[in-house]
Length: 115
Length: 109
Image 1 (cartoon, rainbow over the protein chains, first blue to last red):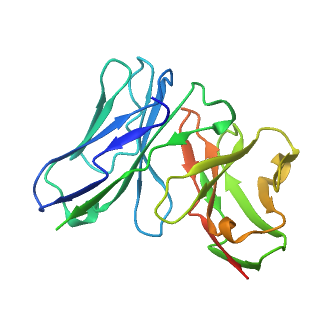
Image 2 (cartoon, helix red, strand yellow):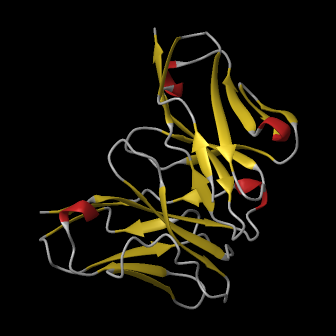
Image 3 (cartoon, each protein chain N blue to C red):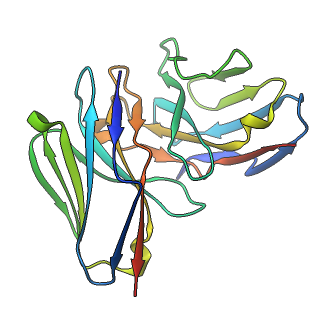
């Protein structure tokens, strides 16, 4: 597609439920990244996929978080047994690899609210 | 690991010039990037410096000094639409970007 597409744009869920967030990167971009941004805060790195290599999961905050990328394209971030502190905007980005010039393209994000 | 420091807020008037500084600590250096984010929007890529010196793109310029682990973003002829948060970022050895906490720029009339 022309840009990075994320869905849903907004998600409200009850504490303890599981959620799935989807990211469709730019066609041809082999690198895909997930970040989390709490209100008024910076971008917290979560996970990075590069081609067929094993993902860099070093940023995942707990084992309740997992992500997969199917066919080198679409990615799903899953949060199990959601907690209120998981409330944030989840941003996905993609880039050519290696990310020449640091030029990530971000999606508009999914705003997750855990009540 | 990597860490970045930048001011949390900067205020300037329309038409002025503003400089947003960024210092970083990183175990390996692969370039310094700048991103802009308007409230409620997605971050967008502004500039990238891999080598020392100044890179100019229209009203925006970015500078890097690798020996000082320091860079800045220079915004000239400020416009109201430049009000946004600006993030500096360094690339980790794995390829992912590590972002600073951001500088909120407010442009006043």
